[in-house]
Image (cartoon, rainbow, N blue to C red; front, side, top):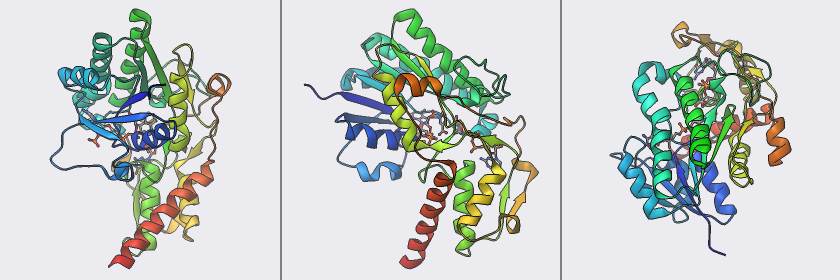
Length: 326
Ligand code: NDP
Ligand code: GDR
């Protein structure tokens, strides 16, 4: 049997690195797409050097995507690249739309042109539900995005569905709720808190400035969620799937757990800064992954508490190593 080839856009991101880990265990040849930068930003895939291939292309550049597909000839394409930080989408709404919305059309057009038999995964988001129209949210819940990022992801979701229906492309949309890990970017709330806890514990800071502590999210572990992406592309038919834990917790609960894990009291350190509150907030998300469980046989394995503990422990260990190295 020939070795299957997977192309991952956004391989330098949190999910890209976990998906590469997973696909290697499944026997894939893994090719990662990166955009050009003046310095390499391969921290999350450092451990995979020699096991994966890296190629340059950009979601903003149509020809680069066509050429990439012509060279690599993948069986599966996982589109994880995006401008993914919600607050930046108010600062740079046009660029967010170019990457996160139109970039998907560019990639789908490249697939249509080069090989319409390629199986395509689109990284859709629970941010599309925004001001939620029902609780919990399923594949049938109407969208009401609350940020330029959410709006761009709603476009990307529908263009994925449209290329499936217009051209018969095997295009899946995974509507993933927040998923986190020790590899999460430090501006996202879970990692901001766990890194903040470790900095305070190490004596490098005394306070942590936070935004809306009442916001609620359905948080899972990224390592579990990338497996659902792969399972979607192994089905007989393409479809849309919600991937979530079915539990919701507040940012305050996150703070309580993370500080307690390090033997600290969050109330002694967390300070609310109104400047970090968003112009339009997504107050509460809760996903219903019944369909993913039934059709894909997928299950989340890591609980909210285990996730927070894993992230705090990893950040504490990182600052510990740093202090020993000095
Ligand atoms: P990250 O922000 O960690 O990674 C984003 C990736 O996209 C990076 O590798 C980045 O590359 C790349 N990228 C950005 N712009 C371009 C471009 N123009 N051309 C090529 N590559 C580009 O995101 P996550 O790993 O957390 O998320 C993966 C995807 O899933 C994203 O699309 C996100 O919106 C979506 N999503 C994430 C969820 C989550 O909770 N994590 C939940 C639901 C959806 P570089 O290193 O060069 O910046
Ligand atoms: P989100 O994640 O916007 O849900 O998007 P983020 O972790 O940034 O925010 C979650 C919630 O926490 C509140 N919050 C804060 N957030 C940040 N970043 N910093 C703070 O100081 C802070 N204080 C409170 C926010 O207001 C929000 O309600 C993530 C991204 O990964 C998207 O790409 C993805 O699509 C969605 O998850 C699902």
